[in-house]
Length: 305
Image (cartoon, rainbow, N blue to C red; front, side):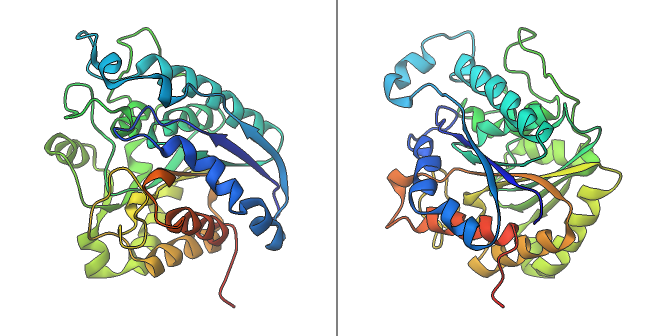
């Protein structure tokens, strides 16, 4: 990879139902992410950090006290998203590859808000056990990390007109979901109606990750001028990635995950990436954080030989 990196830490965990994802960025840095990237010959041009409201000062009661809104911590999500959007845009304008470290998956709202103001047509590859296509009306929990892709597609609004999506809405034909295995009924209907490419674990089992990634690369890059990888570690089987807030068994294997990112690196289509939902408070000996570190390296060019 020739382009220098901009690492953007987003210690935000209020979009999730379980606290701890806000500790993910610091954990990744402490276990040696920058050192690992430097060993690969990758230049970290700058390190940025988005100031976020700490989860510890909030209570679940406060989050649900106002019956007007079902989505939780909307004001905090919006503030984080605006700040992250600015950081992402600044990174691109300075000629750097934005590598965003979450944080829960609600941070994708800010990442995508920034990217869609820089690219005319953005493709998105969404590695996740979930589709994150819920709205306030369909969400069983009200946790915004399950609505992030819906917001970027214009399917969901967080503030009923008080905060408008600042970028271009994503085109469903350039969105690819990979590793899906826990979809709500409303999400299934929306995926079918919009024709969103969704490679479930059934597809990966049946056709193999090589075939799935060839199709993913083709769809995400078709007519786009940028492709974003949004990688939720819960896409990986919890045997390999126990430290995450919403684990679902039967996920992507260790080698399948590495192969997918090896193929993305070889394709050269990825122009930005984020890794989310590493929760050190739920992890075992930093296994999930170390997996995320390895996968980041693989995306950026690390190889067995």
